[in-house]
Image (cartoon, rainbow, N blue to C red):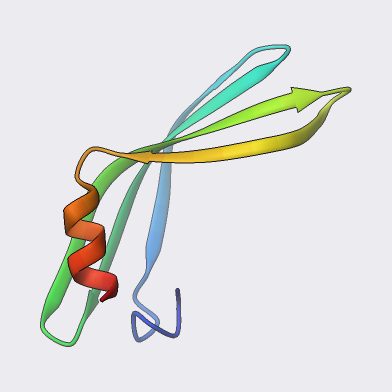
Length: 71
């Protein structure tokens, strides 16, 4: 992602909400490249087992914005 965004891709973790079996991270992404800007909020949901991440999923408020930027 760094290369595809000319090194401008930045993720800021805003908050982490943890539990024994699941943890959620709220984040903000920003990047600029080729006259396009990516500026969106999202969440990462992790499933945990024995203290390790076994699955992770990303969710975004505006998936079309990401598709347009990375295309």
